[in-house]
Image (tube, rainbow, N blue to C red; front, side, top):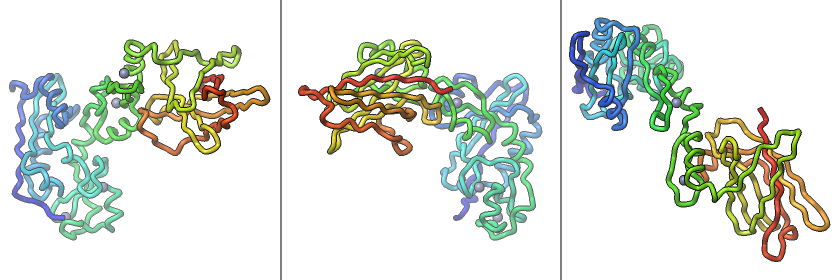
Length: 332
Ligand SMILES: [Zn+2]
Ligand SMILES: [Zn+2]
Ligand SMILES: [Zn+2]
Ligand SMILES: [Zn+2]
C-alpha cells in the first residue's frame, strides 16, 4: 500500500455569519449523488478548523485510501442553528484505512507519520504501521476522535423514509437493523422497492386482487384459510388484511411431490411468524408447523431455508391441485 501525498483536499470553513455553503435541499442532492452530509453537534468552528487542518492539511495524516480518490476529496461547511453541517465528498476519509470500517474511538496514529488505524487493526498488525513500519497503538488521534464522536449523518435508507440521525460510529449498526431497509414488491414484473411499511401500502393500492387475504390466527379463534395450490405454481402471495403484511407460499416440484414453505416479505432481521399447513386427501392428512423466514425480496434467499413441507404426489387431484389450510400467527 502506498500513499499519494500530492493530494491536498480543500477545506472550506464558514464562520457563523457566512452565507451557508450548503442549503438543506442541495445537501440532500449531494447525498443522492453519493456524497455524505455530516452534522457536527458540539465542536466549535474553531475546533473544527483545527481538527480538519490536522486531518486534511498534514499529508502524513491522510488515510491510505485517499490516493484512490483522484483529488476529489473536499469538504464544505455551513451552520444550521448550533450545528455545523459538512459535506464530505469522500465519506471514506473517516474509515479506518486498513479494515475500511468506520473509525470508532479510540483512533490511533503511528508515532512518526500520523497514519491512522482503529484499535482492532492495531492488534492485528502487531502495533506496526503497515505504511511506514513505525510503532502504532500508543498515540491517540484526538482530532479524528472528536470528529467521529460528534458527527451525525443520515441512514442510507433515507430515500425509503428513515429520517433518524445516526452518529458516524453507529451508522453501520443502525443500518443492519433499520426498519426502513428496502423490500421488493413480489408482484411479478413490478419494480417497486421501499420500506416494508410502504411496500404493504403500495401492494394494497396496486395489486390487492392478486393476493389471498387472511387474518392472523389468535390462538382463541381458528383463522385458518384455504389455499388452492397448483403443482406448477412457483409461489402465491398471501396478505394479512389488517396490517397488510405480505407472505409468500413458495412451491417447488421435487421427485416425490412438491415442497412448500412460507416466508414473510420484510427485512431479514425482523421477527418470525408461526405458521401451520394442513393438507388432506381421502385417506390421510399431513400437518406441518414451522417458522416463516423473513426475506426482503423473492429473489433473495438469504440464510438456508427452514424446514419445508413435502406434499406427496398422491395428495394432488387429477387437475394437479391440492387444497392447503394455512394459519399464520405472531409469536411476539
Ligand atoms: Zn481497522
Ligand atoms: Zn505510519
Ligand atoms: Zn435507518
Ligand atoms: Zn408492486
